[in-house]
Image (tube, rainbow, N blue to C red; front, side, top):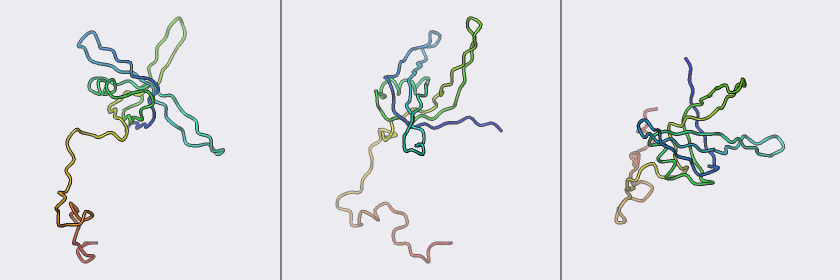
Length: 140
């Protein structure tokens, strides 16, 4: 079985460049994500600049929300594009984004429900399905 999946967390290097296809007007956004490598033994951190391409709704989201130095989370797959020009072979590796999100941004615009201020339960127990449970209630 083959599996091609990647999750990256990094900073956006430039405002996404967005274009639209001529056939059906599908939006395509390209940007570069600066992703830290694990620290070296001497404590120094190095970074990889990873090109990302997003299509459709994800491209629209990237164009509207990503700014320079935004912290972003990208989920997708690695894609290697190969071509030949003037007798020379070229390859470019990029991430084909399935999901693009600002890191620490809310997932939806739905309002967050909070317990009313007049609740008789203490805040730690409010909404906790296990409040009032004892060790004897646990089946293992």
